[in-house]
Length: 142
Image (cartoon, rainbow, N blue to C red; front, side):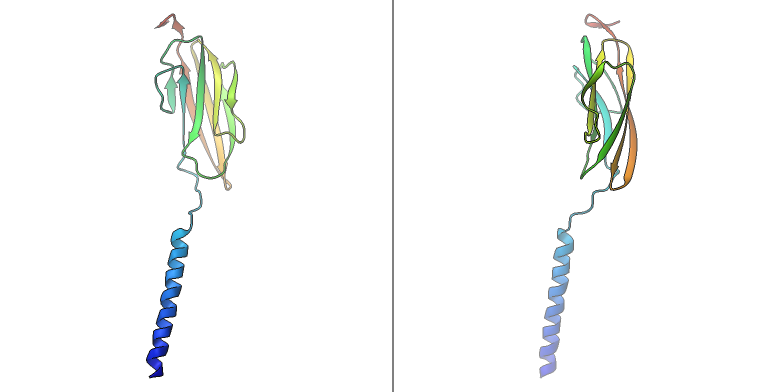
């Protein structure tokens, strides 16, 4: 009679161990993985509010803010920015800890190219985005 009781006790212990392991694994947070991020630009002022690889101005202004951003991040990253083209100055970001970068651009025919390399847990990815400014003469494109 002792054997059924021992088997029952062992079965109960085994069931508890399986349940504990299941709850532990189910509650674990997955490690952040590079690769889900997106990179794009948008220009203000303007009516296009989405971030795209290629963006262009859509409203007249004397000066434009060309913004670039890495989105869909998860966890900690470092960033390395390279901005080329005839921009006037950096508005904000563009640092090793910033997922975004924006620059001031005069009302002129210009393309600003932003390349960012972001690194997480030793893995890196490089992406490029292009902001094109078309010169306005009054309220019309020149």
